[in-house]
Structures are given as C-alpha cells and as structure tokens.
Amino acid sequence: MKVSVITYCGEHFADLHRTIESVEKQVHEDLQHIIVLNSVDEELNAATKIVAHPDMVLISAPGISNIEAVNLGIEVATGEIVSFMPPTTFFSCSYSLSRIVDAFHVETLQAVCCDIESITRGKQAAVKRVNQGTVLSQKSLKNGHYVVFPALFIRREFLNVQRKLDTSFGAAAEYEALLRWFGKEEAQTRYIAETLVGTVLPPSGKIIFSFHKLKDIILRIFGDYRALRMHHIGGIFTILRKIVFSVLKARSFNLSAR
Image 1: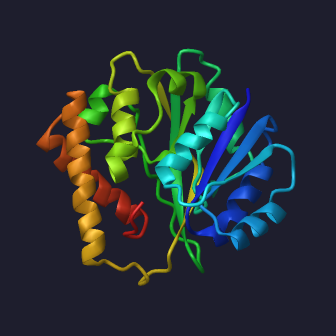
Image 2 (image 1 turned 45 degrees about the horizontal axis):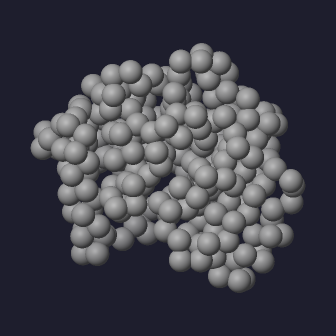
C-alpha cells in the first residue's frame, strides 16, 4: 500500500532535512515524498541537493500559501494513503508508516490518527500524547475535539470524493476540512495510541505573543465558527470546548501554537 507524504514548506526551511531523513528511514518502502516549496532560488537550489532519490517530487511554487500547497500536493499524490508533514515535523521512528499501513488494512477505514510528541530545540522535552483517544466522528467534533494534520493519515480515494481544503477559510481551512470530511455519521476513523510523529518547537522563552498573533487567533476562531455553522455540527459551545482543547494541546507543546 503506497503512502504519499506531503511536505509544504513556506518557512522553517532549515528543518526540512529532518523531515526528509525521517521519511527516508521508514521501513515501509512503498512511498512518495512530495515537497512543495514557497521558495526563493537559494532555497530551491539547496532543496535540489537534498532530494536525492526517485520517490521524491520537488515542486517550486513561489508565493503559494500553505493551504494551496497542501491542495497541490494532493493533486500530485499517487499513494493510496496521504500524510501531511510540514518541515517542523517528522516520523518518530522507522516503523511509523508501517503501523499506519497495517491499520488501513481494514478496508472501511477512511482515516487513521496517532499521537504526536514535541521536542524543544536544544533539549528533549517530555513526551506528551496529543490527540490521545481522539477518534474523529460527528460526535467528537461537536464536542470540540480535533486532530492536528501531521497526526492524520487519509485514504486518497476518500479525499478525492470529499474535496480538498477550502482556501476561503484561511487559517481555519484545516478545521473546516475536518468537519466536512468526518462530520458525517458514515465516516469511519481509527485512533492508534502510539507516538508515531514528532514536532520541533522554538526554545522555551522564545515564543512571542503579539497583537498580530492575537488578531490571527481571533480570525481563526471566527473561521472555525463559520465552518461549524455551515456544516451544522455545533455552535458557540463547540467553539468554547475547542478553545479549551487547543489550550491543553498548546501546553503539551510547551505553549507553542500549532
């Protein structure tokens, strides 16, 4: 079963090598790694040197947003399973994709999610299981639960039917996609209680909160609420629960934003 890993790199280019190395070390060999770069010439040249085997596809798309990059990656993907992996994330162990593929042998599953650990630059952070017990369903979404994209693996056939990310939702596009994809009673997903993915965070004390970031948070909340109302899954109480869960997940990531 082939897996397409989509890496969308608008920033954090220096971390790209870690993501690529973690993909290359996977025991599961039937895979495709798509790297979409919002790049300048220097970054593109450097990425070309990193990409060294035929299972990697490098796409240069200057000016593209992360959401558009994800959609472009989905269009190019040829695997039966699609994984989303920005350059600050990586597979935690060599058998990560093998565990995911094993789960997808249940043909009725549309998606699988796992736990994700955080590593602060310069030192190993305590491992926190984010997404613990979260099975994506209409009920869990209505209760404010959600799954971060790097810990989510989806059948490409299911994505083709359900459509890609809606760019009109901006920062809330991932959440709207979760509601649209898994907010139906017939959607079947599975949660694996294993830490298969990791993410790299800024050093403690380097996280800066600003009015600009506060504005982004407010816009995301309004986008989330708009998505909830459009899909008739919840309302203000769902948003409040989601904010609580977001804070808990941020604490697991040393108070870093996703």
